[in-house]
Image (cartoon, rainbow, N blue to C red; front, side, top):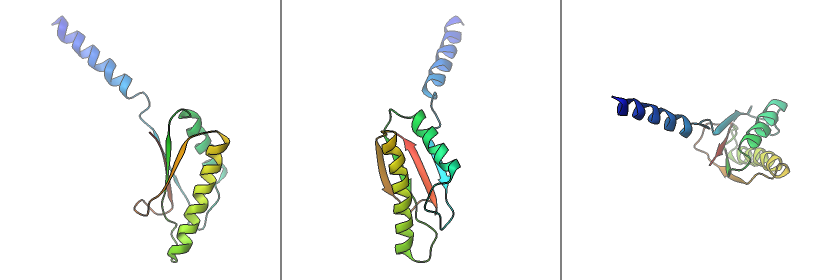
Length: 112
């Protein structure tokens, strides 16, 4: 009986320790024509970088919702440049990815 109680407590502690930073992702949405960051988006990115400053971070940018696919790609590149600039200012290692498969006008930051 005592072993069972110890086992339950041990499993509970291990579970709590393994989920200490479960939210390692930030998802931001843009309007179709938006290439710069809003103040709120900028604040959230800086907060995310501060929280995970010692981790490798991957920024995945989706296409902009524009009829011209080339323009959509250019918008996404400008969004990536804005994120990269903030990462460089805070000396955060960042990997940039363009993914046409994710939701349109979306940016995902993930801590690896």
